[in-house]
Image (cartoon, rainbow over all chains, first blue to last red; front, side, top):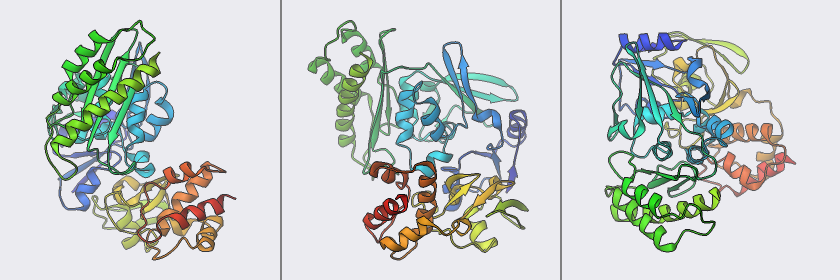
Length: 282
Length: 147
């Protein structure tokens, strides 16, 4: 097995073009598990931890560009105020040791339906920046996932960054699991309420072949909320929102939970996060 | 491949390293440092926790080649002090398999926080599993070390 160790982004893209079968590795929290258990023997690993550009973030106009290699710990510590929904999800990832290493880029690359970063990216309408020696493209995150552990990433492409609009207080994330740490989500849900634009964003995790939005629930809520009102969300609106979120999922029965439980839990998470986000954004 | 890194302050070299093996394997099987324990090999248990360039990580999830040129500190490299003493005094060690990882995690916590609250302690140790103690004695040890 080859070990490719580029030190610049240009070298990394050239290496991926020359070795499209090479598996990129950043924090190793997914890739190393597969190697340790003999589930995967790629002809080459492409180590991205020496590419400093991947660990940078910054503003560009009214969007934030966050490098794919920024670990969860830094998402929480440095971006918790700007991207509160993503930071909430990042706090639920693994353990301190895992958050010190794991990255949103790696989460996207693995493309697990249960990836914790995916629902907040979906709710915020993030875009994923993909790059190769052929050029750069930006893919809306709801077009990124194509199936369980599959994405639109081409064999010669690497994930460079994600782009998100900073939120203030209308972001929420909630996750169901057997304990607070080291848990793969039974299901999860992210919500973004933007009072200025009067828009609603949603993201569902671990309850369909890919992470998904709930477009009907978003449209219903955007039309039903009294955006100028300081009052609470009417219970009937919250309940219908929960029903529509659950209806957008396509869960299965597996070792972590049943499809029926996941649907029920999603409706509860949707109602709760709506209450929290509405309160938080007033 | 040949791997060069600094371990516990010393320049170390390992030859014939398979690039896909873990830093944990290198430490235990090639460099004679069995303090970091190999239990789950999937980042769940924390018993292989080491510092990599000053940050606590699961060494089972670091590819050997990723450690090239980096500085690793294992439990063997920590000076014997208040953390280890507190584990002994509080009876926080039973079978001992989780202890090295917990010592590194607690060492890091106390380097960051003088007087950690109980929720701080629980959060800092969330990635370290113990199957003997029920954790109470471990929490006692952390509180004692923080005094």
